[in-house]
Image (cartoon, rainbow, N blue to C red; front, side):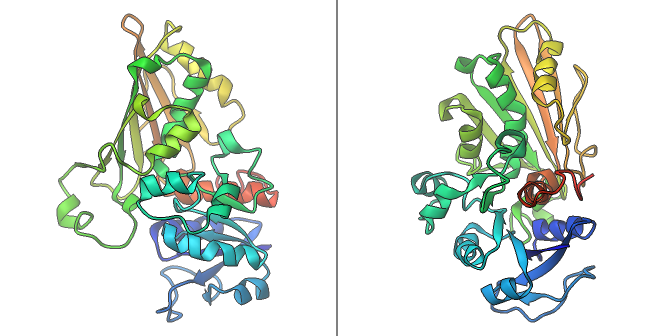
Length: 333
């Protein structure tokens, strides 16, 4: 049993990691606490090992091979070098190491990047497109939830050349409230969210550059709007584009079926059928459905994931499995 550490286990993504890893047959989770006010109190429903301080000494003494950082970007930038120096590999669930260059990070996160060398080294952890780099990486940047759903829907179509890029792509994205994290804010309080529906970060959402760098789109070709659903979890993205060189929805489905043949976590619906959030809740699946009006070329792809699983903890475990040489589906199916 390999020991793996979880930092940020009190947050939603971190707690999801604990849930998944407790049923993983090849690893033993170790809870690491990075906050100075740590008191040693156990987290709810956890029956595993006692919590330890997130220090190099703890990592070495426990023989921890890999550490998950389910922490804010500034905390991940602070902790990742120490964890790597202690001999552990790192899967970071924040946006700290996703964007490739300090300039790109600063432009979208409005803060300087304090670890540019690690930023350049990090492998982007979307296995369906980046699998070759992940097994040998010391540091993997787990993708954001919105970009995961968007890129899995968009990139195969761009690769096949069936999108009229001059007409642009519109991504209408909706997320459950857990995507905002566990720290309480007025915007995510019950009275603000219940019986409500709102858009936020319009045209400046920090997940947009992840879609651009993986899909190959230019910013002017992609319109993205995030919206907050009065639900606890789930992401559903309705993606609009003009199709070219195809005559039916079945043509688009064949592109997906060819690109994702053998991919264990992609499920493709029949033409004209769309996925929903209930179908992906608490799973690591991305469900895709496509509809096409052949006369006008109007096409719609619906992409659904659980933001805490395929959009966070589940994909992080998928990356861990690749890094440690385990079956990619271990603990996830």
